[in-house]
Image 1: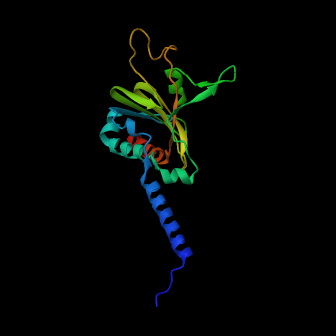
Image 2 (image 1 turned 180 degrees about the vertical axis):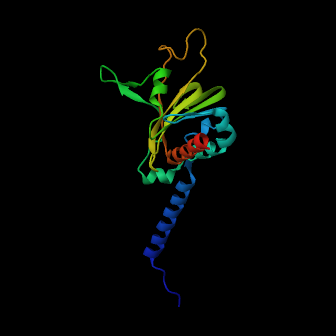
Image 3 (image 1 turned 90 degrees about the horizontal axis):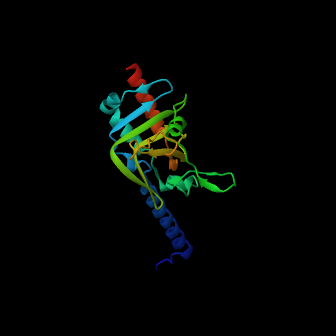
Length: 208
């Protein structure tokens, strides 16, 4: 005589199975915040005291930089466990004199100061062979340079600001002019592996 399978056991097994499927899917789906910028032509890394020569970086360390730019990405499961729902990209905003929320706008010179290397961070600059377009929501940002300050996020997903700008302007307006404004863009990243890699690269490039 066959024993009757208890309904609660069946329901419980189904629920557990469904949860496992969701976890597997969330682990498989990844967000790659630096994916659009992997086709750079040259790269510059600056420590607190040294600017590493680009030819050395490209010849000896490009694969390592590429590998760790990819590692700034994360799985949706990772984000879920950290209760992170917004990954960006989005424009950085601030309050104006009337306490209204507006986009933050700074000059290229100010952007370069904002990403300056410190004791516990590196300045990373990527240059591209031609102008490119990056979408932030429905808007398009034209650029051929990317600047960012890289420090450890301690394995967490944090907002990181990047600065996209054009190195060559049309007409008589220079990108160093106060007329040319850059709006910082923030995206979620885990920059810990990249920070460690840049430290290793800096040590090898400077001290051999």
